[in-house]
Image (tube, rainbow, N blue to C red; front, side):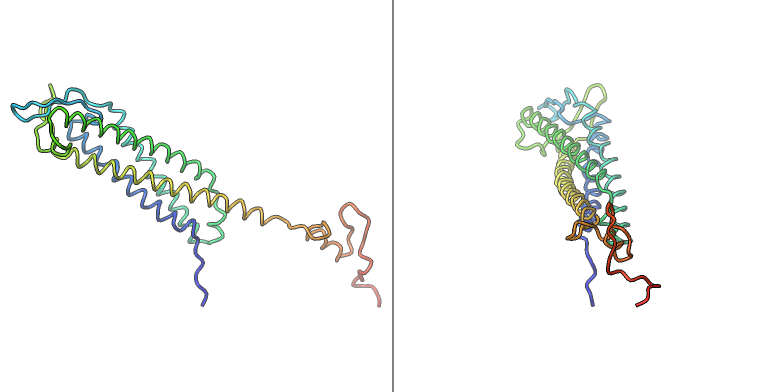
Length: 246
């Protein structure tokens, strides 16, 4: 019994596309939760001071909202594209292995590289923002780690109290997931380039192959039928028609 044919480019890509969509959600949801805890403000790169009298962090300035929004809203595209193209790839693979081999992948290759670059930028923004926030937290309070700030009170004028009980957990999760997404997009970009190169090879091998006489198979078929060769007046001298007598 023959083993089923497996596509070692499209098959793994489908799995990674699904994993990427899930990881992208994990990387963006915590950023939104932190914004909600800080009343819609972006905590990335925020500057804080510490009041020793009541053990409270006072937010002097928040980071740019556009930084958090970029990290959050980019997920719309980095989730939709893997789901759509991964589903399309799975359908093509299910219908026919040859169909999967000959999929048009140039647009997908360009989008993969674009999303890889954008996700890398998003991860850098997130990492730099977290580093600057934690530096302000530890320097102003003398705490050993940024995570210890979760056990203190947070306040901003004139809004009032803030919920800082989970900011480090959320941001650490988002940061880790974001860089893992970058790794996944690198894998997908490599696979789609391999897929594109294979498609070119398939189309090249599918063209008419010349014979040793310099004519293609379609040309030499005419000789057998007593037709003129292209560009010549030569006919097959050994041809015997159906109504010729022996």
